[in-house]
Image (cartoon, rainbow, N blue to C red; front, side):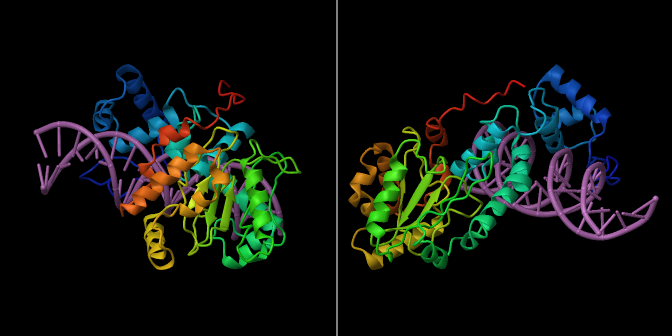
Length: 331
DNA sequence: AATGGCGGCAACCGCAAGGGG
DNA sequence: TCCCCTTGCGGTTGCCGCCAT
């Protein structure tokens, strides 16, 4: 941690703004000012509170440390679970995640993720299978092929529900159809549970040109787990717990969209990236919302528009996220 | 006791978005 | 329409403290 007296390049004779750790006196000043005056323009706060800090620094200190409604202490297992769940949906949008964890800040969650959960997931993946030794790397074709015979690859940690199911299906598998059906049936089962009692959080299935899933993703994701490969032409979103419908928030990038369109131009008469999904109507038939969302994406692609993650109505999406009544934020 | 490695976390940095003039 | 300012966000940095040697 930086020493309170440590000053950066701005702390020279021309600019006496302090940097580094906040002293208790500075905290008092900011706290008193905020409690008496409320939040206003942060540069005014810094000035009026008599702080030799920039407004940005004051804002950060207030939000991450001084705010009265902050919850202190370690993350509970329930919070941990929720963070993992939300991260699987939202990716690194820490502010969005923090908004759903009362009393926690985005910085806190981000640090927790980077220092604890990421490491834990890495350990999980390295112990569970050599083919998934790095959960943060893009799944390789080799890994995909290697996992066909074994079916699901799952990982578990004592006391933790999340798990990975990594590329487990491929068009090259002789039992592809039955595997696909089995897998998708499993996915569509509300609160799906495998024989070791694990439950899934979220799922995405990517399809090759021939409508065979080339990558599946369930539950927790690392930073890059959703990245596709050349074979990805679309995705289907599976309802979880009968209510949760998840668009491929992390799986769609502009680059991939471009790739996708190119592939449709060359490989397929249809420009609808979801035509393959729609062929599997049984997959989506009881998930109209997901279907509609998928169709919406397809329309965007058809129109040649860039699709950004932010284009999704996050609030609309998240309203479907099951509440976690077991969470106790009162402590 | 000294020291080096490592993890946790507070804070900074750079960028983007939004609003007002 | 452009510019400037403010705010918000995610990534990164760097220090402290713990622990192993």
